[in-house]
Length: 128
Image 1: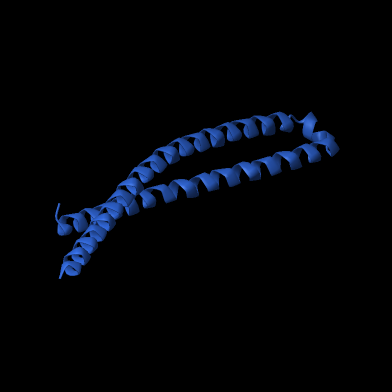
Image 2: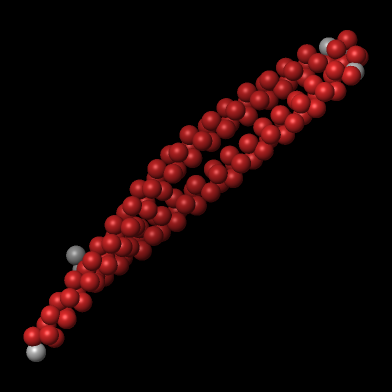
C-alpha cells in the first residue's frame, strides 16, 4: 500500500470516527435530560408525600390517587425512555469503538511504515 493511499484511509477513518462521536453526543445529552427529569419527579413525589401528611383534604378529594397514578405513569414512561436511550447509546459506543480501532490501526500502520523507512534510510547511509 502506498503512503498516499494510507494517508487517504487515515483521513476516512478520522472522518468516520468524528461522525460516530457526533452521533453519540445527542444520546448522552438526552440520557442526562431524562435522568434529570427522574430526579425532579423523585423530589416532587417526596414533597407530595410530605404535603399529603399535613393536608387532610388531599386524601378526601382523591387527589392523592390521581397524583400517584400520574407519578407512576410518568415514572414508567421516563424509565422506558431511559432504557431506550441507553440501548441506543450502547450501539453508538460500539460503533465508536470500531471507528476508533480502525483509526488507531491505520495510525499504527503509518507509524510503523515511517519507522521502517527511517531505518532503511539510516542503513543505506551507514553503508556509505
